[in-house]
Image 1 (spheres, one colour):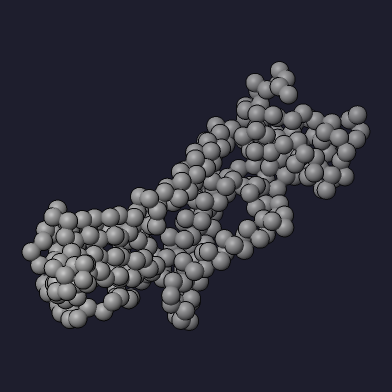
Image 2 (tube, rainbow over the protein chains, first blue to last red):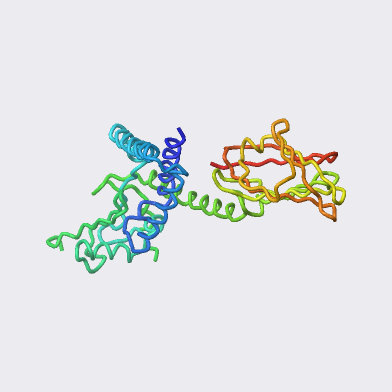
Length: 151
Length: 172
């Protein structure tokens, strides 16, 4: 019984924690983020398994985690409200070459982050060349360049 | 940094995506408040709310001062913490220490040093016969491992002394 409860509690706790951390926290994985992720994994693993290293226990934990995960994806499919709650929504941060400063501040981003995404995905050099930059639900910044013909 | 467009920054856009800024602002507020809560948890952890710290480490004495217990009020399931029990008695005599209540339900005693002369069950708990030294002091060190969950109340007393009441909480 406790294995299922452990997995359930850990799943929900991690979900809330990563919601607090925001969608961008682990989206662009730097070397340090990767190390951090591994440490979080280590700390989680101990609590998930406790002192029971049997096959049954690990199966039970894995089954519970996958069952919750599939359950949530089914829920998200049925209800837009749940989907919005769990996955969030995309947000525009650059509109027609202008930064939306207040949004950037709330999203804990700076101009350099936007330009980095613009360079790496579209080869864009200046802010004016960006038509839209959007923080996607997974935390990545997607960039739509200005139409070259429209001047 | 600010320009006149700032005031409309937080209005919802319809193109290229349909936005609901009111909801997004709530999400951002949740992130901010959540961060405060995380820092609060960290501080409480440093202070010892989750075992081992100023809040958790307790030093209890019986009213007549005969029995003294140093223990952790907060434990975590599966982790071990020390408990030190000192009893004042007539020098070079033996003294009976009774540990009663829910202590043995919530904890398993991993080590007990020095071993008492005799141990027997008594009520819900147990009774230890300790040998006092030349100064009339008998001390026993326990290592407790939290096995249960929740609140456990127990009380200790040496022959003829007042009770020392302990309240301990085991986190999951």
